[in-house]
Length: 383
Image 1 (cartoon, helix red, strand yellow):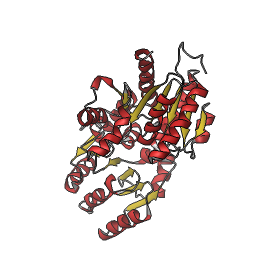
Image 2: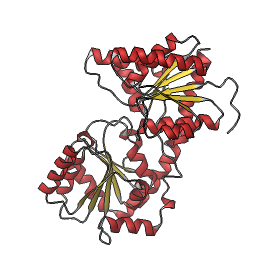
Image 3: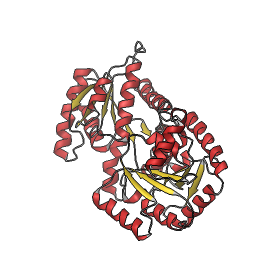
Image 4: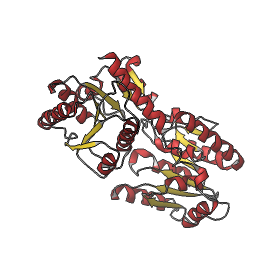
């Protein structure tokens, strides 16, 4: 741990809970980043499995249920957060969701000490009517806002009229040491293929995603049904609710593909599964704010077929690291799969290009540096 830089800001991150999700992991990663620089920081949330990781990273955790959305709960939480601001001499409150943002923004007004407010837009959020947009606007209550992709930056500017020069883009990233194909041996890859019943030379397809309607599993299954006369096997890694999984199984059975599509559930060996695969998918039917699954696959040198909207337009280079297809179009998805599997030597070239692209643009270190630059800018512009 290094000495803190002069006038280093003390940070309080706010989020609803510390479960095992992307926003939560980003919070823990920022805790470690700040600690490495000798900067004191805290987190307030409703708790969860990653509280231990926050505390192990050197940050104090305050159990405040800032994810509660009722006006009374928000006001109560604002007073609780204000006490933390004063007690811990916090300089910046950084909110990562809307209800925490309301509590955090109000707390900066209630606290006795000068405290700045910042939020990160991690998604599009419902904005179909004026009331929803008003609720969302608290994310823009500070002089700066962080967006987790250029797609979200453009959304903030277009929907809310927020100045582009006040939006800091801090795209999600991967840990190169964790997502490193060189760390997965040929024996490990072979073992994974055996586990999923792959025949020699049979293309292994994979999609890593929570099983929910808008992630596009149904479209992918329909696309593969059009290619039933070709060799392939698909692994779907991810959890979901029982009803959604049952509906997906019924769709698979209806196409007669139950022996070729494996629902593998939640997996801890995602990097190794991606390394063993020939092709990966991000098939969402609604735009992904960013889409970490795509860069994880690319980092493991696995080309990606993704839908042509949202963050995928940033993370996929068509013809170089993968393919972009029309969202919800099973025929277009099938055509891209057929093209990919017809040229296996090209997949290797695209895989190597994908890893180089990710290492240059989408690492955790780069994301944290960009987000920290927002802290520094906020301190410099609002002394």
